[in-house]
Image (cartoon, rainbow, N blue to C red; front, side, top):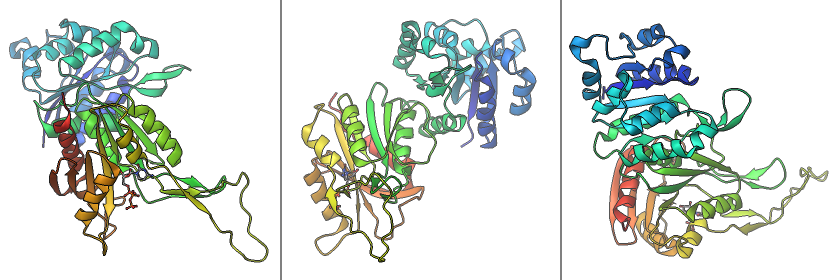
Length: 405
Ligand code: CTP
């Protein structure tokens, strides 16, 4: 789909990263109009934006007045993305000020609007900024949480512009869903686990599994593009942090359990897409285990890990929260894939179970998936072969349907 994208750029050092975002849009065939603020041009000049977008660039409403650009640009946009959004720009947008081309465009736009803030931690955390962000979200805008890390200068903290590729992915998700339904998870806190855990035998060796984390990351991205506040508990995944998602990194099942249980206390929904190891070595050697001279191999004694999904489903730390599990099944002499799925749903005590048939081993590391989503209420939703993103949206649709309020 070719969309008309308005890329607003306000005056922060991260303006240079918006060049990369602009390239992503144009290379994907989108029609991009860049609307910088006057202070954005202090960081990156108009010729750069004009050359990369293939269009003239203006900051104020007095250029090309005969085409009424401040009305026209906003009215015709399929999405407006402001990256970086400074504290000043957020304040103006929240209060409806309109003193340049970008702020007037924001008032005339009726399409989804995405703000990607970038600023110093103190400015982001200031009650004034937080109140402005809350106002914008409450009005239906998507305000991406800034990433944590190195800021301008020597300091680190929350306030970085997320990776431009990830902002692009989020906006693509917004465009795919179209206007109207883009923020149906706004105000919801969701937790997603992803990846596969490692159970250490010694400081260098572990038992692991083939989970790539792709489905969990797709779920996190999809929820963020629908306006949710997302915590992603990530076990040994080598994928970029999704924009606006707070990522907690873990290695072992016990660490995954701690992080998930802590985040579950305030969550509206939890999706356990991770593959935690069911067993761990009973003892972890402090030193690297050496080969024996006689050629013998050490035996590994295993003990069971906690079942996180069953634990949070039975404890129900937050009544009303919707809990989702995954089941990779092959079917066997005791039952078909779906029969085993139904039995697992009952055993785990969760609300939804996404059942994958992995007989061919095709799901691992693939960007596609097909599944059946089973509900404890008896529902059964078949999701045909498609992208993990498409499956993620079906899962969030089913979660949304089950929220009590
Ligand atoms: N899971 C979990 N904690 C574990 C193992 C699994 O929370 N220690 C979660 C997974 O994240 C997934 C679901 O449980 O959402 C299904 O995992 P699976 O390994 O298929 O379930 P098992 O109970 O191990 O069933 P089986 O007997 O088929 O291995």
